[in-house]
Image (cartoon, rainbow, N blue to C red; front, side, top):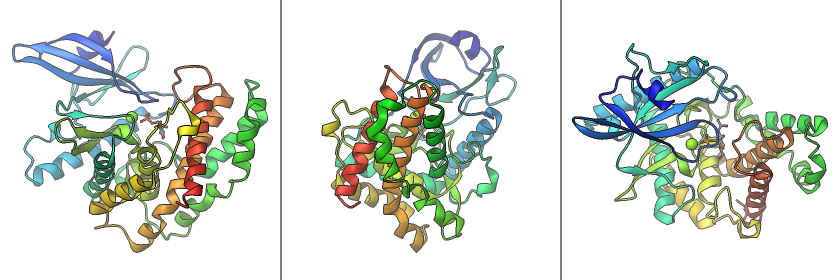
Length: 353
Ligand code: GN1
Ligand code: MG
């Protein structure tokens, strides 16, 4: 199957191997090895999840705008081969950035960054610092791209109140008859409902500006150098669009200050590491400190609990709906994911972050 897709892209050589790659919960990703006279080279092939991304052409237009902008900035900064340090799209033989197959599926390819690797969980202090730094640099590289240049590919993506509404609706309709399994979680959500508007209210008042942000900067969307451990770039750019920096910062901390990770098998072991939080913040502000307003910086800590609450509700609602959004590996996976986020939120509350 991959062979037939890849043939349409402008690549020298033939496909030797294609295997599933990474641990993203939405798209389908393959690592492909292409052999030619020049040797074997690796590329990333991805199928866009059209259940999540209803307008894949707009997603691709955004990814092209963002990757081109970042490459241009890097070239101007004296980096001669940006495709080795930031995601770079390949083109099809007829010059497009994607291929639509006979079933209407959208496929795109990226250069593979050989020197990089990603981890599902934070590896320690240095890694945490680099994750924060990568996010700050990414936002800085895009700070001169006007948000109007991008489509809103996921309207309401980080409007926490919307997820609360969807959760309420899933509870009401309860299509899989699962609501009775989540009595404790319902109570947990009920007691924290006010968190849902804590951040978005500040957008409504115009206190904090819309910028171009990543929207999904969890640990495994940050690529680091295999040898030095230094951040190379942010990957997974489908959610890059206008938004506020807070959901980025919060998501980064939610993910990287939780050493047991999103899939922690033992709920009692889930913890929020306040030391890692400070380290991520220091890494982030090293570059982001140059363009954020005072008010934006003041509101950063608030984002951490809000986004953790948000993701917990998203997993829980998806469990109630019958796991239609996030890819699962076993029955009950989304319920467990929700429980991990809620445990993490409790730990944050205890540590007053
Ligand atoms: C999804 O695609 P991936 O796995 O990087 C999700 C994020 C969640 C994350 C939780 C488009 O990201 O919002 O925070 O899972 N992306 C989308 O792991 O919904
Ligand atoms: Mg990802």
